[in-house]
Length: 506
Image (cartoon, rainbow, N blue to C red; front, top):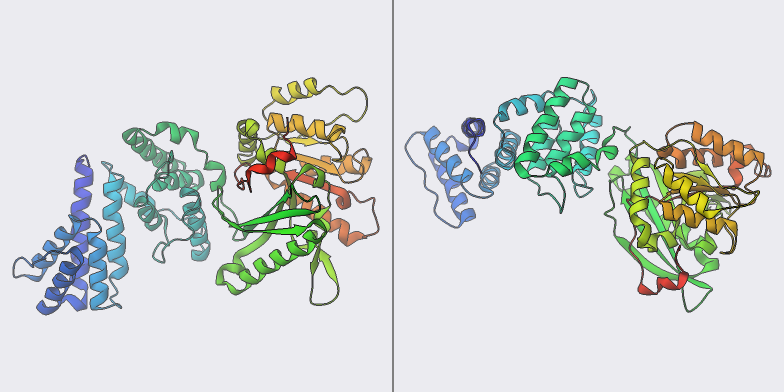
C-alpha cells in the first residue's frame, strides 16, 4: 500500500481505539488473562506471541500492533477475546474497528476520517428495520447478488461499507465498497454529501485505473430504494424433447430479490406436455412451503413466475394454469402471481444478445419509451421498414403483435423475429385477437400508467380485475393479454447442444 499521511493518521487512531476497547474488557484486567490471550494468538499464528512491557496498556498496544501486521490478525484478536469471555460488551466495537483497519488499507484515502464522519452521518430511513433492509439490498447490488445478507453488527451505512471494503471485486467489476458508496450517493438527500461520495469514488477509480467501470455504472438502475417487500423469481424453462414430440424437459431456477443472475438450476425433469400444468403446481407448492418455514419468508411480497417457452407453445395461456387448494377447487396462477413469458429461441441465439442487452438496459434504467411499436395488421407489411423503424429509435423497447403467435409462416413470427433482431425485450399480444378495440385500449392504458419496468405488475392487476369482474366476460382485455418479458439480466443456461433442432430466430 502506498503511504498517505491521512491513512497513516487514521491507522494510528484505529490502533489507539482498539487498545481503549481492550482496556475496558473485564476479561483482560488480570496479567494471567492477558498471558492467556497471547497464548491463544500464538496458537492461531503458529508462532510465539509475547507480551512486551509491564504496564497493561503497553502489553495490549503491543498485541494490537502484532495483530495488525498479520493477515486476519485482528480477526484472531476478536476470536481470542471471545474465547476468554463470549459476553464481552466490547466485542462489537472490536469487530467494527477490525473491519475499519482492513477497509483503510483496501481503500486508502488522504481524508479517511472525513469519509468516516460522512458515512456515520447517513441515515436512509428512521426505522432501524427498514434501514437494515435497505442496506442489505445495497449490499446485494454492490456484490452482484453474492452477498445475501449482512453480519448482525452491520446496521449502519458506515458498518456496511467497512464490511464490503474487505470483499474482493469480481472480474471486470468495481470493488463492492465503491459500488456501495455510489449507490448511497444516489439516495442521500444531502446533495453536497452525495457529490463528496462521488469524488471519493472517482479518486479510488483513478488510483485503481477503473474509471471506465465507474462511468459505465451498470448497477445504478438496481440500487433504487424500494419498500420492504421482496421478490422471489421462479423461472421455468421448457425444452422440447427432440426424440418425442409429446415430451419436454422442464427446468427451473429460484432467485430471491437479488440483482443480476446468480441462481442455480434446481433440477430437470422429463414430463409429458399434458403433465406440465401439474408439475408446475408441484414446484410452486414446494417453493411456497419452503418460504413458509423460513423466518425471512414473511418479507416476500410476490413470487414472480416466468415461463421460457419455444415458439410453438408461446401462445399457451399459462397464467390460467391451475393451482391446487385444500378443497377440490383450484385457482389460476394469475390470482397469486405476476406471470410473464420468455422466448426460448431468443435465449439460444447469441447473435442478437448485444442488441437485447442494450434495449434491456433502457428498461432497467427507466429511460425507455412509454410508447410501444405496433405491428401492422392491414396493408402491405415490410420487414425491412420495421427493422429500420426499430433501429432508428433506441428508446423503443416494446412491440405489440398484429396477431397471436402461431406457426412460423404467420406474420406474428416474422414480427417477433424483427423484434428479436433489434433487441426488443417486451412483446404483447392477445391470445385470441389482437385487433379488438378493447385490447388496443388496454395496452395504451398499461403504457400510460407509468414506467415500463413495472408493466408486468400492471398486467397482473389487469388479469385479476378480469377474474374478479366476471370470468365469463371474455370481452375484458385482462382475460386474453399476454406479455413476453425477456430480462437480459437473467439468462438460464442451455440444457444441451441439441436445442438447435428448434430453429433460430433468423
